[in-house]
Image (cartoon, rainbow, N blue to C red; front, top):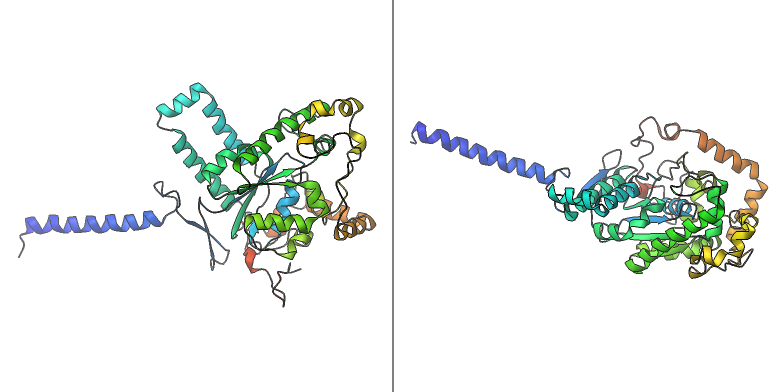
Length: 391
């Protein structure tokens, strides 16, 4: 029999080993533990806790960006209509955080301070990537494919491509004259844009698009896909089939009818703050394609090639008023006629959505109520297997 002096330390030793093993087990399964591996898998859960949706740094995230007023919201609501995808509203957190990171690194003083503190680029990028992933995964309901839509996020395509090796990017492109007209007429505040000067805003558009287009081309066709707003509006099915093919997501007809899912359980959540909300409540239509034509000042038309050389580089005719974007599909023409015939109805619908709070639709729990958190791939199925809006 062991003496008491030997037995006591032996018991303590065994207990210590057991505690360490238990702690190791729980810490390794805890996704919040700071020593998780880069490819550690975390989970979001449906409201009934019956289904877990994995998210991890190497998953094929989707980033939608471009200049504001270039169709980024239309693209995201069409993707959001797909039962396997969730984008959600703009947060603006991600581009601002990436901008702050770039400021630190571009400042010799701040960069040196970070290095001296042990925060080199690898540590900083890893921490920011984890933060971004958590924002994308948790600011909306769970889904098989997660998407982020913040227009200026694609100013940081190169950094995001390194942080998320399997991510893909959709760069929305629109005629710069239409973009500027929309920004000015809707009074969209963008840092550095003088809304009183069409010329200055067009120059800013040119600079921003030159940068984002270059980064998209640099990322390569397997990572970044330019999508022209005009073609998306004219030929939504053709363009969206290409987009979903690029994203490796199966086709679903419901994305052509996104308006049926606006603020429905398991459907598309809209922000009352975003400027495009009143437009995307409607079916895809031609209304916005030609509004800008008479708004371009004469001096801007005269100097257009000097002010915005990216117009021609992107395939637009800088001298055409109106430009010929192509013939719309009958489906889109019919949508446009229907909206014009029932203009009062669509205006009221837009106003109603902008007035109502998120909680009015989805309950008081803004972190997803039981009604809202319908798993996106659990929508009602029709007899032929196609996804139904459930309305």
